[in-house]
Amino acid sequence: GGMQGLPTGSGAATAPEEAHLEFHIYLDPPAAEADGDAVVSPAQEALSHCHAARAAILSRLEPRLRAHVWEREPFQLWVWDPAARPAAPRRSACLPSEAHLWGRMETGDGAHDEW
Image 1 (cartoon, rainbow, N blue to C red):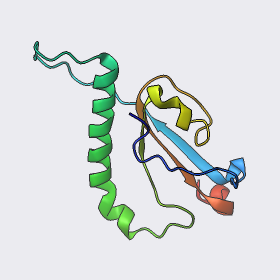
Image 2 (image 1 turned 180 degrees about the vertical axis):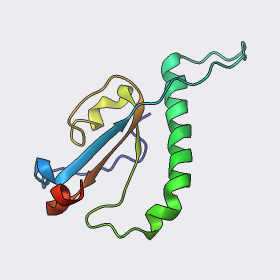
Image 3 (image 1 turned 60 degrees about the vertical axis):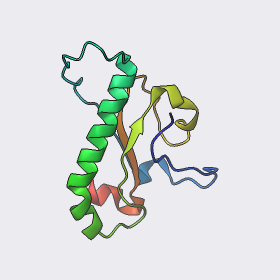
């Protein structure tokens, strides 16, 4: 379990609220499969769908991301696992109860110029 790739740390030195961009990407439910033998909970299925989507998105974006010069921290995309909430409050302003993709980027002083 846990937030895949979630950064760790004390969080003591944080940037001002206006110096970051937080985003959440909610996916449509996966298409139902005709496999009657598999016993997977809807929550497990949603997490698996999120992990697969994350991998596909990152592989598609990787060439562009590699070429970009990041001012603060690079683009990262995590899987939000509602069962792993203890790690989430330090990094996110909200606590959704649905599995999804999310990220948070430090933008610095140029946030208003670029976003």
